[in-house]
Length: 111
Image (cartoon, helix red, strand yellow):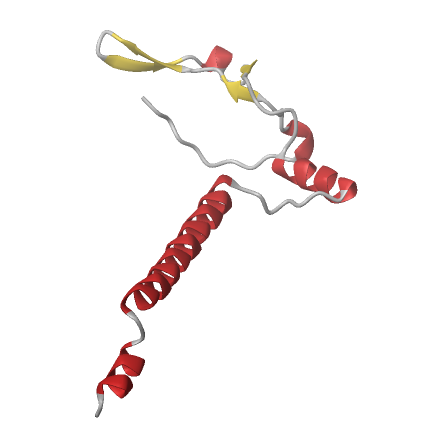
């Protein structure tokens, strides 16, 4: 079961890479809240820095921050579209070369 609450914290109260311990249990068909562990936290597997810290580090290092998985997917889709258009263009040129230019054939066939 999930319990949600609204709250706000000052910067000194935030612990990076920690979660609150579960306080809600189901006992004999009733939910019980363990208020003794209400403020307990435990460490989780979390990246060592926040998104803001990562942006600051990449800016100092002169690296682009705009890379993301979705931007790479969009970039790949654009490349595939360009390749398909280029193939169509080459195919049209090859077809014209193979069959000859229709306009020239019509001009040549007029007597």
